[in-house]
Image (cartoon, rainbow, N blue to C red; front, side):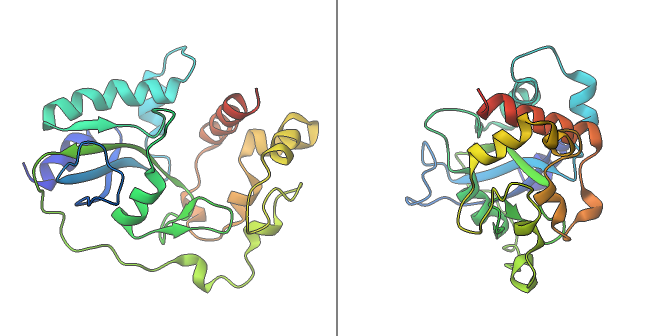
Amino acid sequence: MDLSTIERRIAATGLLVRGGFHPGGDDAVPGNPATLILVGDVAGRLWPHFNAARRDEADPLDSWTRRVLDPAATDLGARIVYPFDGPPHHPFQRWAMRAEGLRPSPIGPLAHPEFGLWHSYRAALLFGRRIDLGPPPPADHPCDGCADKPCLGACPVEAFDGRGFSLPACLGHLRAPQGRPCMTGGCLARHACPVGAEHAYGADHQAFVAQSFLAAFGR
């Protein structure tokens, strides 16, 4: 089993391989696997695949992810864990920083040098054998050269201050009439990032993300 075989099998689901690493004792990976490979999305490429197969479920994206990736993991001889398992939750952001060399943006999500904030991680494949992952990814961080940090000033209720995130302020805004642009067109702070702006999710995808966020945290 080589990396290209894994990439082809994952691509058939509508998702893609997002890098990997060989875990050590400090990585908090369950079961001490020899190789961890992340699976996720960039630029909303999963949306047409998910939207065509979605069902009326409490967590339709998470359920779809399990339906397409559980069989893929079986085919590849891997165990699989998800960011929506738990609590306790697996440290996917830490794993992604190792796998792709990314670092957090001023508003929290990891900033990708090509796709900006328009990407996500949906699962991790855990292999008992060591798989050649090729050279490590570049460590360029797009936020280092961004002096203005427009993402920090774009939120209408100043939910981001560069040190943390005010969930109550965000939720209150989304519930109010003034929050409709964020609910239908996506987070304004996320849109303010100039990196990867051409890869922004489509309108339906962004509305789904906002509605899912409000359903998960706004109860």
